Amino acid sequence: MHKMTLRVTNIFLVIISLLILLLAGCSNSPTESEPEDEILNFKIGQMVMIGFRGTELTDTNHVRSDIRELHIGGVVLYDLDVPDGVSYPRNIESPEQLSGLVSDLQDLDTIPLLVAIDQEGGIITRLKESYGFPATVSHQHLGDVNDPDTTHYWAGVIAATLQEMGINMNFAPVVDLNVNPDCPVIGHYERSFSADQDTVTFHASIFIEEHHDRGVRCTVKHFPGHGSSTEDTHMEMADVTETWSAVELEPYANIISAGDCDAVMTAHIFNSHLDPNYPATLSENIITGILRDSLDFDGVVISDDMQMGAIVENFGFETAIELAIKAGVDILLFSNNSSEYSADIAEQAINVIKNLIGDGEITEERIEESYQRIRLLKQGAVVL
Image (cartoon, rainbow, N blue to C red):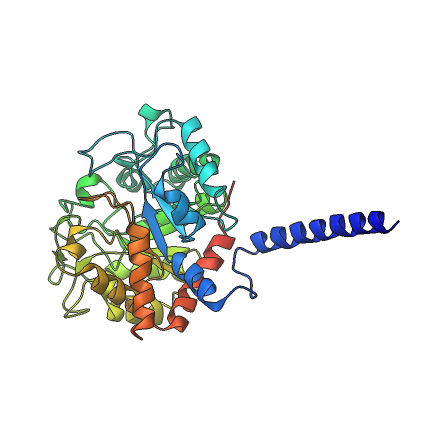
């Protein structure tokens, strides 16, 4: 009788333990019983999103430990690997392969990942027809046709594809105004719906609606407006001081006021009228002053790639991270797909943030602000 009682008690304890683990996993956050340092480290990790190499998860792929041990908040997927001499494939070969990869990524931890991609349509498309994905059209095409049914259809095609793959965040729509049709990073690639702010708002809102209907989050970009630039921030700083105008803020203001804005991606553009010292990604005047205070946005702010030329050529790694967080950026994006690839980029970034906290340059309260925004964003993103 005594042995039977012990056996039943042990089984009961195992069941209770499993339930506790299950509930902890569903909470998508660290438990209060964990050491304070571990909780803080978890929250810091959630602020980092990286790119990685691999069409499948090998045992030696660093992204495994980045997710399991560092608890990074997300990953970004590419079809093309730039540091390796513009080679294919990087993460994407086919629909079957990609859905398996995304599923395996999500299985690495109990905390859901943001799995992001630049699937704007047209030229800027990671999921190409040649890999077996549906055809898409550019923002410019949709703006030129200017028909809501057409935009609903093509945006729906993109959103349904992402949902099917398990990708829960699109770095789109682009809401830059086509001020300079020859802009080497916007107009040249047909990424803008229009030069008219109302047309941009109209089609971007439809694009977002189609994604939301399928549980996919959107990121409007590139704040506060990249469409008038004459330089490509992938290579160098883009100065829009003499070409930018306040009308470029209107699509953001409209989408935010409608309650449709999940996240905003910053631009690495410089505008001395808005900030005499720093580009938008690193500017408290622009991110906190304009986006958060003036436009009343309290959602997630994602940096454009922190490894782009505009940042790395003008600011040190540590300085850029410090300035971005102080400016109000919540997720620091490291594509690992610019001039070089670093397998320990997540660890590097997280250590910088830890040191900044230790030195008193960044407060734990500031980390908490970003963590809470990221947590809310993840609650609205489908994880298949």
